[in-house]
Length: 408
Ligand code: NAD
Image (cartoon, rainbow, N blue to C red):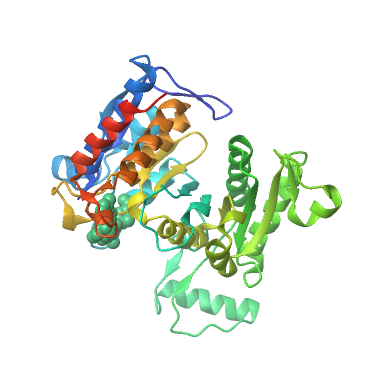
């Protein structure tokens, strides 16, 4: 039994019996977490016959933590996740009321998880609102620490807002209405480049043909526009031989771009919402500032079956927290009804991150097979003709059965 070792170059040394902390989550969290742990354990058993194992270690956060230790995010939880490097979490209810820092935001900040990564791929058989969901195969890399989400915001008429308005008027001769709230949008070269670097590395390592920088630089030149420019600059400086800017293709590769070379392109954010619907096959890895990525990830998830099916992870330099992308759906808490697929696919991402690809592949195959058999939870059953609706725990049992029947 052991902990993951984080090497100096931020790669992981993973022992065969690895300790992984998990946060059960609020609302539907306990139901889906229980199901997912069972399926992941089965995938490891089938793939490695006992040679590789996860030793699950529960850490507290959210309502359960508040009830047991009077704190929504105990210090102990942060410490354990940091020591173990990789963790998985169910959804957490955001407590209502002022003065509270979101648990998700705190986790991101403490571990500096600067990239929110969302793979978006259709599972055959999943109900989808578009005609060709099979054409969608994208991975969104969303910057997680900057932009209008940096938390530098002041309400209208506060002294901070008034002083900023005055300062801007006096020093920069720009008028802002007196009754305005003010938010600041910082986008740095450091923050942009480390995110885009991660996206390009991912595309190269996983055989994706392009990285698209999605920005609104035509309007916000020195934040979103700079994100785009820094992206091209970084690609040239650090991955010069392995990438090509889209506009350089006719000169550099008139016969066509060779396999293995990643095309760097950019699209304006609003147009991008059209392109992902009209020509999804032209895009693979996307790198975006925080706000664009937030909108785009959910819109893309809808194209392939909704948030109940969409996995995600927040990753920094080595540290990684894998999570369900939906919320805690309190309406369905304890009913054993929720769809565990989002958390399960996040678990699959986690296995890939650990380098345990065989188990990850088994999970994908089992999920595809189960959905094609039209065995689904209530959320998909209502959109799928002829579906057999099962409970969350039953869905896990069917997944495990299919997983064991899978050829290796
Ligand atoms: P939600 O995602 O929890 O639920 C909205 C609706 O989506 C549910 O009523 C349900 O119909 C459906 N749904 C969601 N997940 C499902 C699943 N796995 N299976 C089947 N159906 C599912 O969104 P909400 O109601 O806006 O938020 C509830 C709470 O969750 C809030 O406190 C919110 O802040 C929090 N939240 C947490 C996270 C997170 O931890 N990452 C993300 C989003 C929302």
